[in-house]
Length: 288
Ligand code: AMP
Image 1: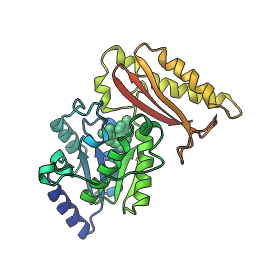
Image 2: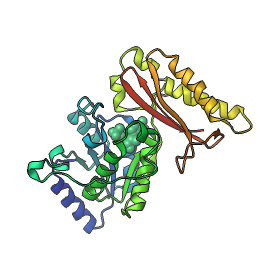
Image 3: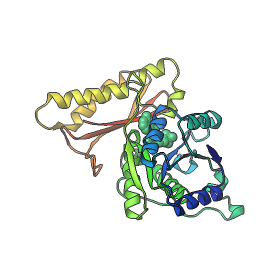
């Protein structure tokens, strides 16, 4: 496995592979890898095949964090991540530096952003107003550097995957987006690098996101007809906030294609939620 830190070297390597017809599958991440990320890498290997190349990027992208968010404290451990990637059969680990991705004023500055206008406005976009602009910008940059035939994203960040698919379509980027299922801990908590922040009892309370999803699923199964989203929202908020360290940020029921909120919930509706457990903000989502 090669570890590449320079954008120029990465792009040169990708161009050489492209010219000789070598397929490239790409997994963009912010590192501190867990089994969820590894499942995306395995999916990437399937897509690329034994003769193809799997590229994983590790980059904690400053532009997708708000000023009050955890950019500085976001967990980082490149050497452990590199070992995990090597074990998983990754060909190139691309770990660019901030001042190359977003050059400082002294070296010309950075002026261009990519913005998706519709799917990115609700839920995460509402709670974190500059988040998706940062995500679409960095992913567009990474696609131009890595030149992948496929890019694999996790369903854990459902809205993110939808926004990226839309960007790829609108900007005619020649990459196929593959969305892989959410990988969970045995008790149902969705794996996340941020779970590292959950110590002791907070870790136990964090299962409430999954419990809320299960409750929503049970309600849909029980009811024969579509029912009021607002009533279920209140019930789930009650369940979540019965955990002393948990505070609901949002819970939304929506159409899985358009991400438009629905007033009535039925089988096929999608649910997404964000919950603070202590100071840690966790998200999850599921098909009902
Ligand atoms: P992150 O490093 O958290 O930015 O995530 C990088 C990629 O891994 C994104 O496409 C995420 O959706 C995906 N991912 C994160 N957690 C999980 C999980 N528990 N299961 C599957 N994919 C995940």
